[in-house]
Amino acid sequence: MAASGWTRADFDETIEVWPENWPAIDLFDALGTQWRLGGMGGVGGLDYRVVFEYLDRRGYRGAAWDDMFADLRVLEQAAINTMNGKSIDQ
Image 1: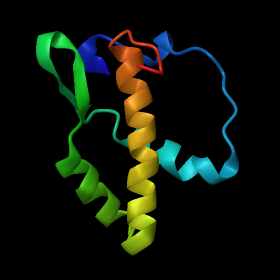
Image 2: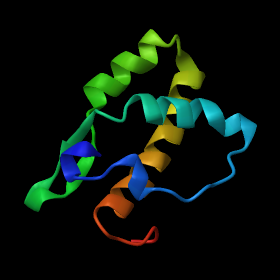
Image 3: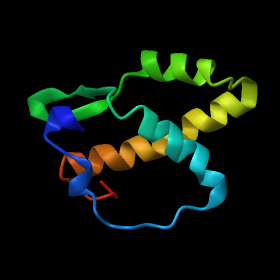
């Protein structure tokens, strides 16, 4: 986020998070400094080498690893769209 000029203050909306989604939110937050810049100054996505290492370090294995990565990718895509000024459906 910081590489794109965004700060937490830019996201002041309060949202409800279901308890079963907190692990993915926590992981996403922990990876907040691992963004790669895309073409023309936009955000390209998370650095997956770091993501994979972090998933392993947190003890995710097998289906749990796959599920957490899938959840993280949903959050990542929504963040990319927001940071690059696109609607969620684009």
